[in-house]
Image 1 (tube, rainbow, N blue to C red):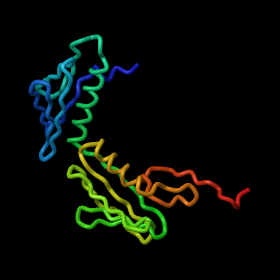
Image 2 (image 1 turned 90 degrees about the horizontal axis):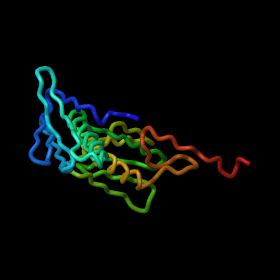
Image 3 (image 1 turned 45 degrees about the horizontal axis):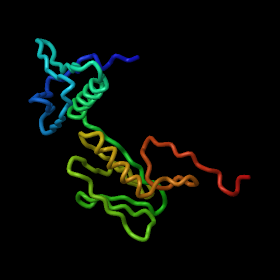
Image 4 (image 1 turned 180 degrees about the horizontal axis):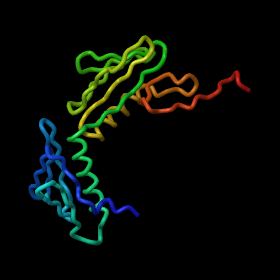
Length: 184
């Protein structure tokens, strides 16, 4: 069984952590995330000469799941603020297009109308590659949950179909194609 949750969270020197009551704030330059942890857990910052780390301790031994959850969320916040997250979507198919008009994403997916999608403020949309039949939508942000939620919403407009693979899919997604009527 893994004991990762017992380890302290190592902080890069440029990441700042502030704790006030049951609220922890992790920030770096323009990025800032906050989290209200549960009262069953004690969180403190230890600043040594060579390293700075966050230690999560359990106050009530009857509920260790709060320890694991709090440690994982704070560790993810440090990663989010430091590096951010990125998800890429591919728009594949003849007559399937995607383009950005300001902050709006305009999708032509062989429907009777164009689909417009405006991402939330925390998420940035860009087009990485454009060719006649293929477009790649790059979704970036500091909150992993929001980035994946936006990617899922965009993908839901036209999921890849199983015969030709046309539609919107994640860049690393593999669509298993069916044979069709001709293959008996």
